Length: 116
Image (cartoon, rainbow, N blue to C red; front, side):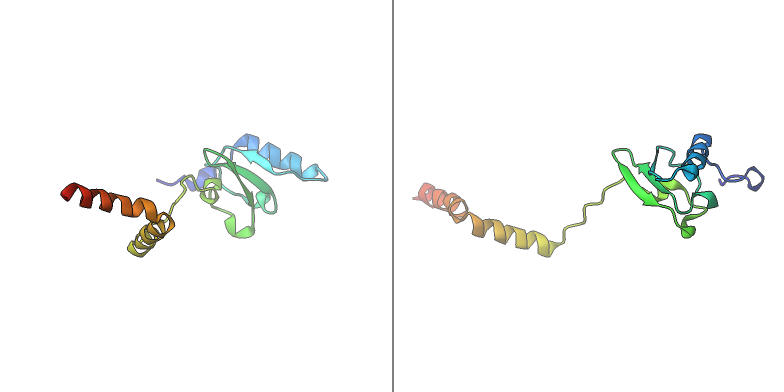
């Protein structure tokens, strides 16, 4: 369920204070925040944020296209390690057997000796 229109977008009050203080500074530093649920408002455009993803802070510079979205959308919490296709697995097996041929042939030799 979405937020009521009459309430307006949710922005953490401490985040608004930090943005107002940052606008008066000469050398703006990124704002470090854990508030992933805060909505990006037009006052945030051009400001850099460090958004926490649960492990580390992801640097984000706010642009006009981001207005209306949540801060957490731009800081993914899950790391995707790609699916390995059958070709990649086969290539890795071939590469492993070429890199250490002595270990690849020993089990076969042991089996042959056991049969004799």
